Length: 168
Length: 68
Image (cartoon, rainbow over the protein chains, first blue to last red):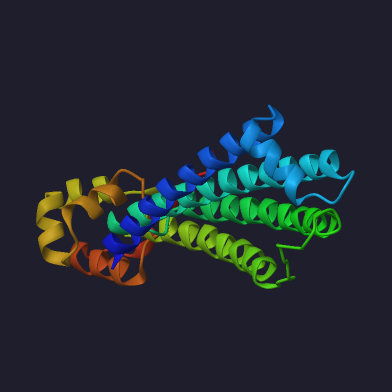
């Protein structure tokens, strides 16, 4: 089970880096007016909105890159936690810090998601037909709270474990 | 630490080694060594009871408090 989870996270980390590379390449293509990207933007934009659409597309892609970097950091923390579980020492203070870091990264993702919602709302006014949708979700915000609580529990648990180890 | 463990003195008075005591009280030598060197953070009542029983002493003989 732990091995399968670890393998899944490693695969997802790799896929995430592929996505970062794709977003970066697309941003460069749009910014440098590479013919294929520039033509595409002009084709879908309503008359006179091509430049604004270009800016919004770049914003969305930058949000995508930042989100993917935050996701990568979360995956790294999960891998470290899994390694500590495999080593038989999950109740260490480092895992509390890792969970707290994950909560902060998730908070960054949620804030970026809000920015994404505004960008999507803007983009749908600039194109011929609105291709994107966005719906609010409380799941991410609840996960942030859960991670902060778990981080606190782990920190307390690790302190108790330390005390127990010094008991004769 | 202000609480000092006098296990070394008690063992010397009774001409007993730490290994002997570990065998008698059923506590690992490593744990007794932690206790003897003052590195333990806490001591269980069961441990205290076993040591006092085997050494024929009171808890107060084993532990002393000194202001730093």
